[in-house]
Image (cartoon, rainbow, N blue to C red; front, side, top):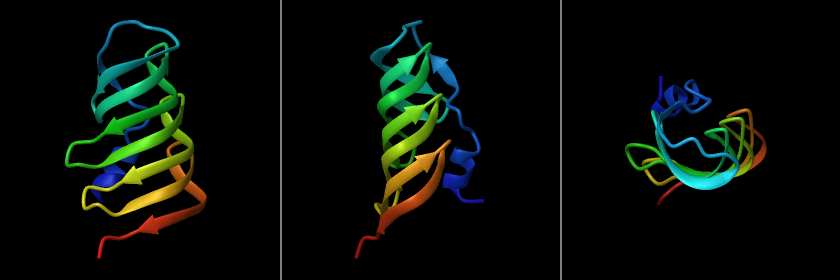
Length: 100
């Protein structure tokens, strides 16, 4: 199983360190990586970015701790995907880019 599939199986994000803050932009540490963005009751909701171990990251919209809506995923080897997500899964139209 690829590391991406392993990460996607762990949604929603599981909080490991945080203060209890509602409806605000904040930096948080989750089991899956470091998140900066908006949360509701310590769960990513709205615009946010997560940096995963190994250099991958996702920048986009979140709903209930899952990637949902438009987003930009950079994989550890620098190829990327820009497109739509629903409940943490790539759906609909999107574009993959690969390094040369």
